[in-house]
Every structure is written in C-alpha cells, then in structure tokens.
Amino acid sequence: MITIAPLGPAHEAAVEALADQAFGPGRFARTAYLIREGHAPIADLSLGAFCVESKGLVASIQFTPVEVDGHRLLLLGPLVVDPTYQGKGVGLVLLKESMALARQTPAVGTVLIGDKPYYARVGFDKLPEGQIQLPGPYDPERFLGVSHHGFDLASLEGPLTGGWHER
Image (cartoon, rainbow, N blue to C red; front, side, top):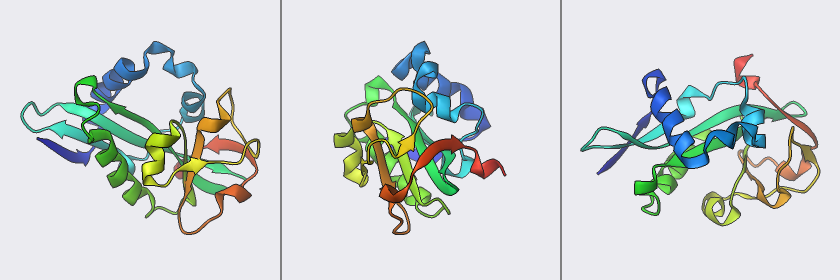
C-alpha cells in the first residue's frame, strides 16, 4: 500500500537517490536542472509516495518557482518513481495531488519539459515554440504548460528565470 505525504529535509537523500536512479549523473546538465539550479523547491508542493510496509520513499514530485516577464510560474520536476513502482499509477497519483496544490498558488501556470502523452492526462499541452527562452537546449515538442486561474500561457514571451518564491 502507498501513502502520499509531504516531503521534508529528512527525505532529501532519498529524493536524490531516486533522481540518480531515474536520470543518472548527467541529469545536472539537462536544461530543467539548469533552470532549477540555485533555487529550492517549494516545500508546500513537494510530495512523496511512501510504501506503508517498508516506510520507504518510492516516488517524489517537486516544483521550482520560475517566471517569465514578471509572471509567476511553477516548473514541475523532477517527478521520479522507483522502477519497481513504475507503471502502477503511483506517479499519476502524485501528479494529480500536486497539481491540485499548485493551482492554489499565485502562479499563473505550471511548465515542464516532458512527455506530452503522460502529462496531457492532467491538462498539459505544448507551449508555442520560441516565445519562452530556456537557458539550454530542449526539444520544443516536450516544452509543456498548463494554465492556472484562466491565464493564457500562450501570451508569455521572454526568458524563463527562477526564484520568485525566494523574494
């Protein structure tokens, strides 16, 4: 059985271990990691899936505060699931619960670099190509977003930068 609960400082090593397992050491060179660099995930939006029997972390999701042209956004990720639990709906449960929380923030939307077929299940869609500049290479087909509060994400233009939550 799995239970969903907030992540805290005591879970940092377990979250890193899951990310190492899922993405390997090269993950720090990925554009999403470049965006997150130097910016802590928002604690209130960081969730973990825990195995009740072993009390171990089997999946996690986090959000980093980012912005484009003064508009607050959330960068979803990483969403990581232990390979033993992949394909069992654990990631989707975490995604749905965390997005419900994300929609309660002042952010106008959530963005990510990921697989559209997976994230479309909670409303993500491809963002217009070239309007938002990221600090590294990425596949424009995988740059996705979902609006909060009725905001038109297609209207955003400019560089995506991090850190509004720290101000």
